[in-house]
Length: 461
Image 1 (cartoon, one colour):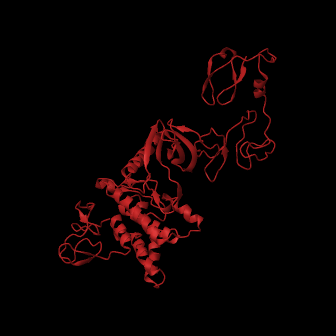
Image 2 (cartoon, helix red, strand yellow):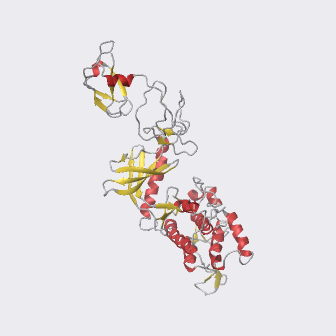
Image 3 (cartoon, helix red, strand yellow):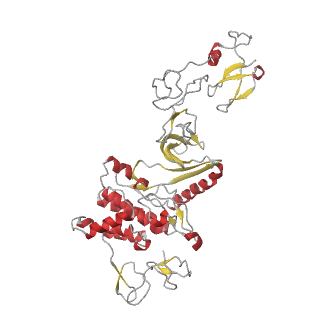
């Protein structure tokens, strides 16, 4: 005849055969193994098996709760769900055990309170955050959830082996074993990029990369602050001072210049205020989220092949939207970010460039005279045609430092003045710009700024 007992680890009531007394048993809920002790002397059941009163009470049919165990709201008779927080109550006849803090679904369209041990929402199946106090890799103790999305969750944690140093843990979310290898590749690439940029103060430090079975974690520097979009929203979308925006732009240019100088070039693909953290000093920034960065490919075939379409509307140029980003795509996103920070208004892609062009060519007082140079720079780099933008972030940073647009360059051979970003000198035809990728048609190299191949006439870019 079965005997009643409880798991000493999770408290789940169990019924076990008499012949298992003194033997190890695995709890079906928490999977922990424990030895079953003989029942102490107590009142007898009808069949003569000793069952302590405390154990018998655990087997009694539970009474329907009158208050929600998650939020404390009053429950209607026979309710299966709390009408206030959405907490799913145990099925009729199941024991209502004492539980910890409920795990709230982060999906804004759901928000249901789930039992603390659940990993996926019982209503919408969204991934649920890891409970505070959980130890990862036997070293990192989870403290609180910072953000969660479809691909990863970010927590603030404590590194117990480094003097309880606070760290940020980016936990990869993947429920499909077949897709795990793909997402793991993205995580590994993000770790490599963070190591590559470790010498730049505007990039968070990477401390560790952990891969265990079907889970992976990036352990990074914990940044105390808020992203610039949240800061603006709290102030009613008030723009930042121009001098500060210029300094932030120069810092971002340093990061992008280093990424674009790799072979093959690395493209961030998601420069925007959401991915720029303002530190507690209200001046310094950190550029975050390199998970979308990728290289443009070494061969002509890989450069032309459409890539995963990752972009944010308003900050992404046409070539990136169709899956063919290149380094100058980041210049477009940077220009949109500078516009947002300097005006408090979200950019609308190259439509914003057309609006700026109208303002710059309109009434003299439509844009302050001491700010015209910055909005001219933004208007150029929000161009729909990639060939109408600056060539590199180095050029943008140079103009940000001078606080004026470079209009002409001197030919190194004949010393004549030429319009900026013109591929060849008008007087002596010497090359003035760097080489660009080979022509897609004839395979010969051309100079940046050339719209058509000088050998076969094929349209470039």
